[in-house]
Image (tube, rainbow, N blue to C red; front, side, top):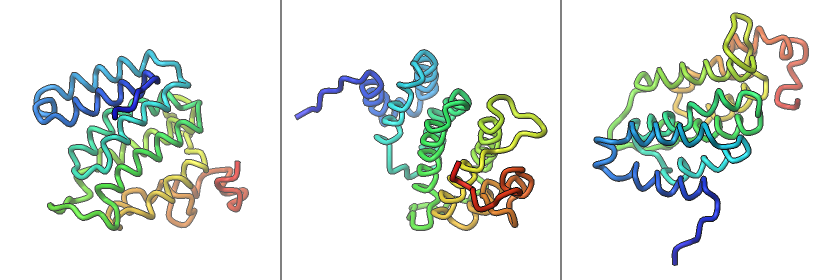
Length: 197
């Protein structure tokens, strides 16, 4: 028996998952679908954006770098829009980090080995977006990630393979290995409060 979906974001999520999962769509139309999603998301009230996570949740577990890239292309553009909605930003970032663990987790078993260097651009995006959110807007030379976001990234990195963990070293609250943490005024003043505020 089919579950009736009343939330418009859930309905759109189901439609998009079916469209994305169709091999013909992946080959020819996924760019148009992603553009449609971005247009749809940009017109949603911010309180509805959490429902957009359903799209990625229906795609999981993600088993290829191509599908990981699709997840980032769908959800990534939402992150700057959520720069001032910290809780929703954290949930969306955690979702993307979890999808990364689907492919690059310590226990993931892909049929074809994948090098961490294949997602260097996604790692760069994560570095940029945590600074954007920490600044509350466009990144400046003095932008700093929020300590809570560094803690979130550090915990998520624990589930990743060592070669991917290395790429996320600076997105951790450890002042000995992270330049972001070592130069963060809040962490330098009181390192025991990381993740509490």
